Length: 292
Image (cartoon, rainbow, N blue to C red; front, side):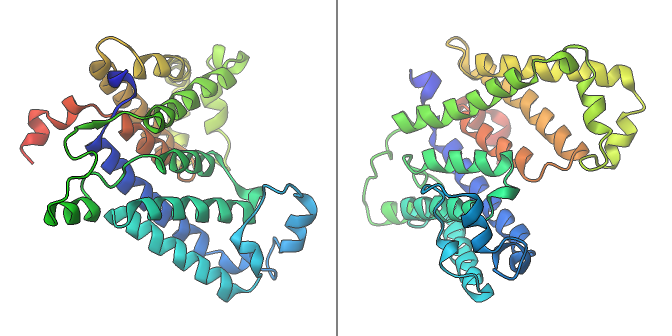
C-alpha cells in the first residue's frame, strides 16, 4: 500500500510549486481578456450565464459584480494565493483558497473550459487534504526554526486517503482517455494525422510531421498503447519505482510532443505536474540529483 499510494514529500513539494506556477500562468492568460470575458460589457455578461446555466452548483465569487475593477481585485487575490502556494506560506489556507478561486473563475465562464482546467481543479481539490508544505516551503522552514516537529517531519512519504485519491485521479485520466480513443480511427492508425491536419489546433511542427504518414501511424498506435498501459505501469505492485519512472518518462515525452505540435493550452503542463506526484524516492536519491 505504501509503495502504491504513498507520495514522497519532495515530489509533493514539486507538485505544489508546479501547480502554483500553472495557476499564475492561467491567471496571466485570462487577464489579457478580463474585460471581454469577465465583465458585463463583454461576451459573457452574468445574466447570460445565469440564463443558460441554472444549477445551484455553478456558484462564483465573480458573479457579485460585472465591473472590471471588481474582477481585477479577484484576479489579484487569486494571484496572491498562488504566490503563497508556490512559497509554501500558510500552505493549507493557500491551497484551499486557490481551489475556491479556481472553481469560481471556471464557473464565471464555463463555456471556455478545457481538459486542462478541469484536471488542475481536480488535482487541487485532492491537494487540500495533503501536506503540501511539508518540504521546500516557508512553513517547514519556520517550523524547524522554532524547533517544532511537523507531523511529517520524520517521514519521507505521506500515505493517506488524499494521497491515494490524487494518484488514482491521474491514473483514471489516462484510463478513460484510452477508452475514449478506442475507436476505428485510432485502431487504424489514422487519428494523429487527422488531428495534426486541423489548422485550428496544429502548430508549425505538425505540418512537418504530416510529411511522414508511416511514422504518424506508428505514433498513433504507440499513443493508444501507452495510455492503456499507463494505469498498469503507474500502479504496478512489483518493481513499482522502476515501472513508474519508465511510465513517467514515456508519458512526459508524449505530453511534450503534444505541446510542441498542438495548441492545447496548459494541458500538457498540468499533466506533467500531476505526473510529478509519482516520482519515487529512488529518483530523488539518484546520483545525478545528488550532485546538485
